[in-house]
Length: 220
Image (cartoon, rainbow, N blue to C red):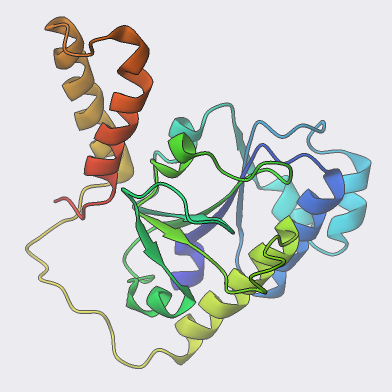
């Protein structure tokens, strides 16, 4: 089922109220999967549960990870959200472009940054796409839960109204995020063995560029 293929990933959320509100928004549109990476508040807590109102089941079945890479192991397509133009190496899309995503066959994760700083370029480099919600150009910042509910409503509408299924040869099986991570890990190990990352201070940026190459492609 398409709704079960979609996860909403909160990277280092800072406020209990926002986590609870996000869970409520997820359930409002019949989605079920909430993933948290290093939440600042104790998770779960009474304030999160109170703010989630009738969505305590979303909180209780959510998953928590300590790194972004671990959280993406079972995701096929990662879509990072940002109010600003970020990471020029990642393809930038708008809400209408979501109609091209195969939500029936692909496991899709929508990635949201922390309330204070959003997502860094390094974090966006894990994504296949970067999505910007159109807002007032003089006041672009959206509350975390507001951003999530806009995307949840839009995607739910696509799933319900889509009449023409996405067609792709059954002979080709797309690589999972976990498989791509494994390949990239081997690539990085081999490059380390030959002392490729020089000078050492440029290694983080070079790794970011490598992730940009592999994660934005639809690899088989």
